[in-house]
Amino acid sequence: MGDWLHSLHHDEVLRFLCEGKLSTADALRLLRQTQPAGAAAKDKAAPPTTNPDALRQALAELNLLVGLQEVKGLVREILAFVEIQNRRRQEGLNTEPTVLHMIFKGNPGTGKTTVARILGKILHEMAVLPKGHLVEVERADLVGEYIGHTALKTREQVRKALGGILFIDEAYSLARGGEKDFGKEAIDTLVKAMEDHKNQFILILAGYRLEMEWFLQTNPGLRSRFPIHIDFVDYTLDELLQIAELFVAERQYKLSPGAKTKLLRILQKKVSDSEGNFGNARLVRNLLEKAIRQQAVRLVSLTRPTREELMLITAQDLEGRETL
Amino acid sequence: MKRCIIIGKPNAGKTLFTLNFAAYLGTTPLHVAFRQDNTTNWKTYRLDEAVQQLTSSKPHHTLGLQELIVTLPARKGAKRIQLIDTCGLVEGIPAEQDIRRAMAATLAAVRDAHLILHIIDASRVKAAGTVEALGEVDYQVAQFGQLRDGYLILANKIDLPEAKEGLDIIAREFAAHQVIPISALYQQGFKAVKQFVQRHI
Ligand SMILES: Nc1nc2c(ncn2[C@@H]2O[C@H](COP(=O)(O)OP(=O)(O)OP(=O)(O)O)[C@@H](O)[C@H]2O)c(=O)[nH]1
Ligand SMILES: Nc1ncnc2c1ncn2[C@@H]1O[C@H](COP(=O)(O)OP(=O)(O)OP(=O)(O)O)[C@@H](O)[C@H]1O
Ligand SMILES: [Mg+2]
Ligand SMILES: [Mg+2]
Image (cartoon, rainbow over all chains, first blue to last red; front, side, top):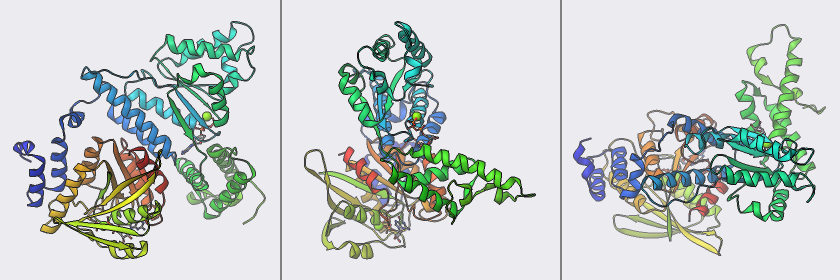
């Protein structure tokens, strides 16, 4: 493609395409390059210290998670925001403070930890976090046994998380014991750490939706520090089956059609027996881990299991007396 | 009114998606505006008639812009947007003048659209030599889309067994973009698409 083409006006690009002088791909490339200055600038100004391959990989990891469309969309919005703030900074424009502390609301096993871990990697590759690692803690890791002990323990966890993400599971349990409980001290210490170490770590508070909402309502000071709220909805049966297939495929196993049917029935039953809180992806994981062990027990007595047999999980490997 | 354009390779399922998505949003009957060479014709269809007459298993069934107005629930009441179905974008330089002209019309409309839905046939990603196969045009569309806020990739035909591998390839190749797996035929994945559109209008 000749260089002179780059000076073509938008309408001329379309005319050349029409006259058969440009391929479709070249026309698209030229149209992109003749976009208004602000938009086209995106091409040139690659973000500073990032490694595009690692970023692509982390984003692919997110993309490959089953379902979670809303979560994925929100993560992309956060990335766009970070990206644009970087650009604006480069252009000397005013920037919004990049406060990325988050609340993750959802039932156990809906992927909160998994998403947090991937997010750490992504933000690391986008040069937001120097390390991007995840420190996952719960009440017992933060709350101590005597006055002053809690602040010490909490500061220690924050220190470990500097440069990455501090992820507190079932965060509302910090407010469980009321005013006199040491949980309160942990919250105060966290709030202070957020001030003292601005932009040096991201705090994610996770837990059941209703409990988290109650927690934030009773701690209005906290609420305003967490601009990002992400809802993790329960997986549908279909998504749980896809997660199951992904899980076994990653480990070079396969589910027989019978195993799939049985798994679906087990999941269906668990879902209807419980009100949402049945374990979601974690349940799938536990069932399949057990099935993999069960398959080993079944095969070990065979003298020569075939490659196919070594890979196949059948209905009888799944727990439950039901025969198919 | 915001304009949402549907683009992609020929036969990727643009028309079937447009029609079924409009129906999914409760549009009935379907009033389609056909725009070609500076003229506009209107026609009203039931969903099954529209699918029967406007989609086809052979490529380049759609040779002009086909517009439909749909309503989406929004924070305050409802929002009307325009869905624009287009002529498929082929690799290279097609010999037929009418296809080249229709593609130019597609790209002109892309320039004015607020949202771009890029449909890729996940079942044909690796089917080199077919019009649907993943190619340079798709990568260029994605790069173009990157400049826009409302750009989304729809990996279509996931009801077909071959689509499984294709979906992984698409997720990997377009890792920097949001990809939603759909079946235009069975209206799968439409809820996520609707939410995306709602967020961007
Ligand atoms: N199995 C399956 N077939 C689909 C799906 N979407 C589209 N098709 C089929 O693919 C063929 C092409 O669909 P169209 O909607 O006409 O494709 P198009 O992109 O509008 O094609 P052009 O207008 O010719 O560029 C038709 O035979 C559709 O029935 C899908 O999700 N699953
Ligand atoms: N969308 C998904 N696709 C594939 N695997 C998933 C998905 N979501 C979760 N998993 C898998 O399910 C398991 C549980 O997920 P995770 O630990 O992230 O859930 P969680 O919401 O943090 O649960 P908890 O509150 O119990 O800690 C992990 O092994 C994870 O890899
Ligand atoms: Mg977890
Ligand atoms: Mg068509």
